[in-house]
Image (cartoon, rainbow, N blue to C red; front, side, top):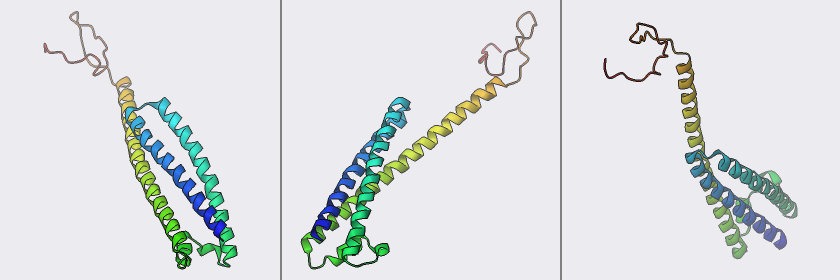
Length: 170
């Protein structure tokens, strides 16, 4: 059981490290979104995908270790969580404290990732709204009706509404 506990703590610590990398990349992405630097955003997204793949592998390993622990302890796997393991470690304060610390650190790191991702989502939504506004404006300028703008020889110049600017002489 001690080796399973060490494996669990080790995989949780590895997950924390990967989630911290993900949080760092997300914070970097926030600045890139604000600058509208698409090539840099693409690079960050690629790096995030690599980190996410590592996290998925670590998650599979963690679930396997948790399954093995549930079998060894003869506990049902569906309700077997870190909290139940911590509760079961009452007679082993060192392992209990280590696991509690890792659990709390993981929880804090995941909350940090969640907050930064929410901010990035809001920024991306606002950026898309601005792009849609610009596209709508350009479309409306292209399809605007001709105005009755005449030159000094009384010929219609055929300018599109808003394209000739403001005439201060009028």
